Structure formats: C-alpha cells, structure tokens
Figure 1 (cartoon, rainbow, N blue to C red):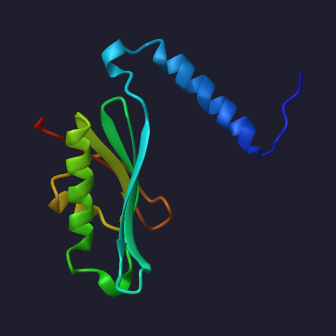
Figure 2: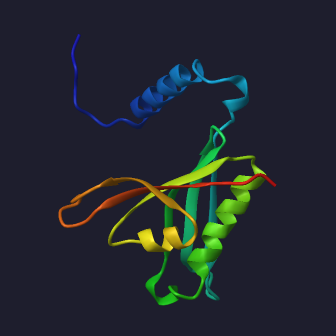
Length: 141
C-alpha cells in the first residue's frame, strides 16, 4: 500500500461520494434531501456580472459559498437583496437554516445586520484577522 500526494478531480469526486455514502447511513430518511446548487447573479446594463451569491442545499439547510458585489455597486442594497433571495429560496426548499463563513476584513457586520449569529471564530487567522462562522435559523412558510 502507498500514499501519494496528487490532485486529480476524479479522485476528489470519488472521496466525496464515499463520505456522502457513509454519512447517509446515519441520517433519518426525511433528512436525506438531495443537494442542489443555486446562484443569483446581478448584471449591469452591459450584462456584466457585478455581484452574485452561490450556495448549495443539503440536509435541510443552505450553505452559502460566496457572496460578492463589485466595489462600485456596494452600499446600494444588492448584497441585502442577494441574501434575501437565498433566504427565500431556502424557505421554499424547506430548509431550517443557512450557514456561511466570512473574514473580519469581509462582511461579518453585514451578516449580523441580517440576523446571522456567530457560532464560531478562528482568531488571528489569517494573521491579524478573524475567520467567522455564522448561521441563521429559518422559520417555515
């Protein structure tokens, strides 16, 4: 037997599938919701992407991967609209919570303003900054 360092997409996909297969054995059937990727994109008049949010749903929750708005369009409400759209999507899908992470130099106060609670912090990572983990519990429709 040997261990090698390498990056091969197929290997990564295989390992991911094996972890999912293992996890499924421990979940009640009603928790085994299929994963679904979602994004909402903001385009300007030239059809250029100037903002967006990407996320994935599984196990009755949404994990926000990325939320970004171009600097020239910040403070115009686009970030708030994007997070609201993700929340509405999550509720429509029957999700109970949304989780995400952000750094101290990004947007922890933005998420707190929208009702997200800090559930963990990696302090001084990267050096001189903090890495925040947040969640928001959702009410059903």
